[in-house]
Structures are given as C-alpha cells and as structure tokens.
Image 1 (spheres, rainbow, N blue to C red):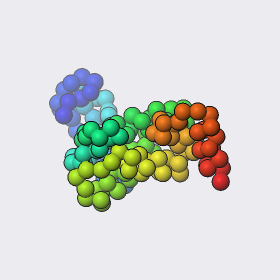
Image 2: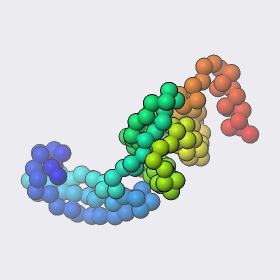
Image 3: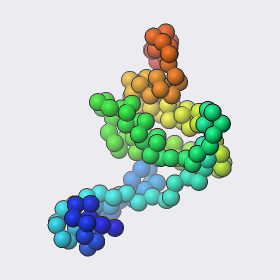
Image 4: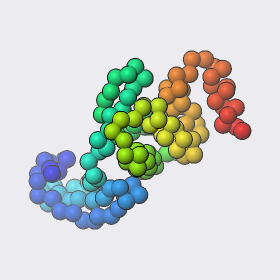
Length: 149
C-alpha cells in the first residue's frame, strides 16, 4: 500500500479495530515519510453474486453502486458515512446469508430501502423517488401517507 499523499510505501499501523459490525477492520495508518495519517478498511472480498436488472441483463454485485445511491439520497441529511457503511454491511450480510449466485435488483433495493426508512425517513423518500420510479406528485403523496401511518 502507498501513502495517498506522498505515494511512499513506508507506512505503520497506529490503531486497528473492528468496523461495520465485525465485517471489516478499520486501520489508522501513518506515513513514515510525510508524517500524515489516514484510515483504511480491510474486508473480505465482495459478494460473488450476479444481479438481475429490470431489463433482464446481469451484472456483478457492486457495493460501490449502493454507496453512490445512498450518498445521493442522504446528501445534506444527518446521516454519516459510517451510517451508510453500516447499512451496506447489513445488506451484504443478508445477501451472504441467502447463499445465492443470482438475485433480482429489486430484492437488493428492498433490503436497502427498508433499512434507510429506519435511518432517515426523508432520505428514504429521496431514494424511493429513483428506486420506485416516481412519475408524479401523486406518487410522492402516496408514499408520504404511508410514512405518516
């Protein structure tokens, strides 16, 4: 591994601890050359699963794709990156438990959206607008009414 600041490979680990509900290890590192510190995460390689999209095409599961969608939905909301990483870790854990080689995208979406609803209702609504293809204000009103119940 190289220092992200000076690209030197002479690094030391200052601190290690479990992260993402035990699914990863968080390490604080220090570059011996420039004295700057940074954090890395070590986790088991991603899930070896194909996602079947709405149009029938298939692609490999992508943790980053979920992260990007969640970051867009939680933009300017009181949701931390750590909350997002925990949510993704929960979803990955549920997917691993299913022990499948293929899964439909809507199943992954449901896992994400149900956890996001508990985390932040407004972020949930923002995510749902894309995930559930809202076309009109009536779609928003219907979803808001469901949230209020």
